[in-house]
Image (cartoon, rainbow, N blue to C red; front, side, top):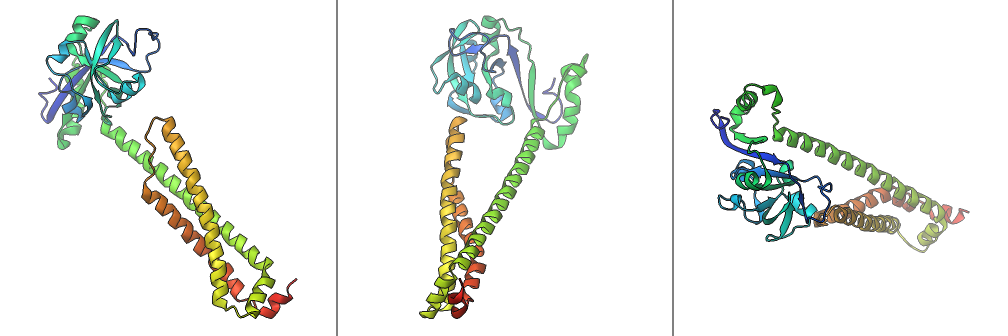
Length: 306
């Protein structure tokens, strides 16, 4: 009936099976790891625009056998990295035939073990009734189809049908991620500003403490330009040392967090280059005023300073 709605292009279904999936029967039933067992129609991947990362998807023959395809999260929590291994579904062994890549439009599938409707009915006592429908419709008909889905699926109890649009959740997630990114950029800008003020303050104090040295160098023939370059170089070196330390600390923290979450640690080269360039820019800007102030000291006044 959903497929007959004008504008609908794809429809698939899944049904929640009252069974658990565990790596072995020795694992307690209560330790589900948040995973579910779902009977699925064979066209689910087409509807969700999903892909098989390893192995193969269910077909007419496999759907009748004790075979299971794992979502990305399910495979990771079960410790399954290849096909051909067996997992304990309900009270019997099922062979893993495939592992899916992540499905942003259906995160619940990432945490599911997918089996065919026939084997779910024959071996796990599944009643055959779907609990979730996934449909794709043309862009111009999305609102109209959404308004018709509840009464189409359950004409007698449409209020019991929950209709959601995953793309709305993805849009909200992207907006939240964008806000969080802007917040981090703002904090980074404030940190650079504070670092620049610190470098400038350090260099001004250095100029005040080294007035005799400056006067002596001027008396021995050093030009104002040479004094400016000297203190500007010191400012750059101070910034570079702080920047290198910050890059090392940031890389270690990023790597540690990625490994703790099971992600591959990756730091793009352009990030390192951009951070290093930012430290040089901050050091140059922060060192301009102290360098100019040092170059303007008169030799006699600088030598007479206590």
